[in-house]
Length: 284
Ligand SMILES: [Zn+2]
Ligand SMILES: [Zn+2]
Image 1 (cartoon, rainbow, N blue to C red):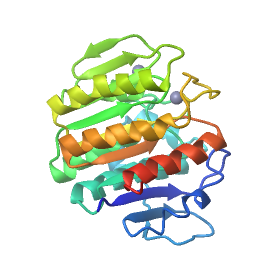
Image 2 (image 1 turned 180 degrees about the vertical axis):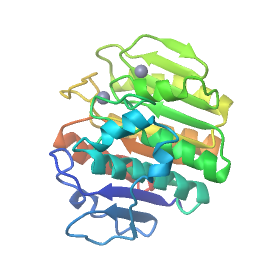
Image 3 (image 1 turned 30 degrees about the horizontal axis):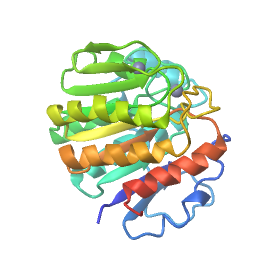
Image 4 (image 1 turned 60 degrees about the vertical axis):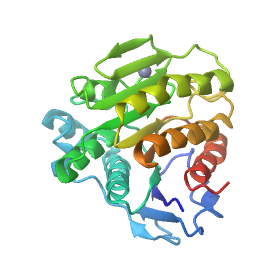
């Protein structure tokens, strides 16, 4: 049975207000493990969530940028958000879990080597990759990015690194360089079209590239009425999860790490997140 880790830390703000309550009926499954932190009421929890360690931060970001991030009011949130991704990657790598969903308070794909913005402070996927390379000798990774916006930070960090496949689905133009690919999505699309582009553009590249783990930068800001509205329905996210999970099964023993990125609506989060986690944990 597939083992799924959920990484969760208490945070203020509207979009995740219904969590972890909405994970009832999921958390009690024997193959689902909750890692949480700074949650004042501390419900049932299997393990603690750790903040990203500072020696790791400086392997991805410049001292100048880290200094600015440390002075922002979101520093602690950023440390726990990125920390969840780093910890999830390590546990997947060790085989303790097969896949993971990381709740974040702030995003990561607009955080580059020496810049940050757009609600992103530290690049969790890049930190996790640096950690797995440094401590475990892992090399090759894929990052698939379905947030509505372009992951300029992730592109910046890995632009000279051919061992990271980055495929970003956003409204920017088509572009390809050194295993980084931008897939242009029209302003308005349908679930069917989007899913077929996801499958057609990411699937074959991932199969040819053979990553050791797949990160999915998942934003739901591309859902209808959201601030990056591409016309997608709330149901589409679970279908994306199903397809990406099956690519991960094919190329890297199901190692898939989902990082929450953009999106603001409480309803869409409440519907889509449990749907994705159910797929990851194979709960039907
Ligand atoms: Zn976005
Ligand atoms: Zn993009």
